[in-house]
Image (cartoon, rainbow, N blue to C red; front, side, top):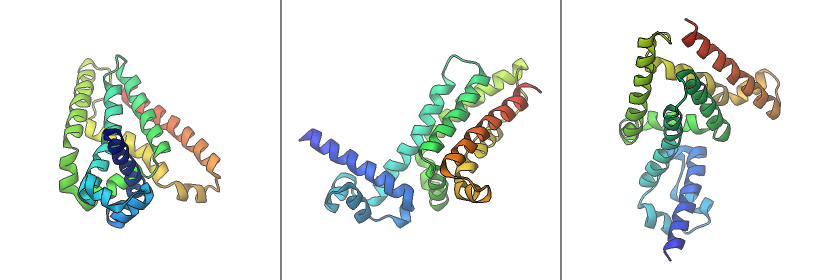
Length: 203
């Protein structure tokens, strides 16, 4: 019975993730989630009590995936330059897998900034602390341009994520097919790697 319950709960979370990413919190109903999971609506309330609580679970899961993967990169025994390249590659991989993720996170934080930022503060603090330490150490050694992490991360993330957020616009402007768009993003990612690393390490 326990295995069945766990399976039902995960099924609901998977369905909720898909619906929330598509419709956002405001546009999603408990009925939408139950229908997507192929389950009775009463089970949604049984496992998560409310749409709000289920949303918080999904939001934390999505944000923690990115932070966990980035923390693993930071903890690898490789150079800072290699870590920055891997962070760019990881952001690119995530955007290809979940192209609506950034819009979802930004829209929801804009909707409920105070509550949602407090839910993910642990991940943000840990990530910032580790990255700040690495950059400060490398700056002292003279191996990197003096730059604050709060400027570096938006430069990296914005350069990759904007392409996917504006997918339809780019495809229309440049008359690209779906496959051509992804070739374009791969080339763009390599340009970002080159520009960021040249700026930081060839000062």
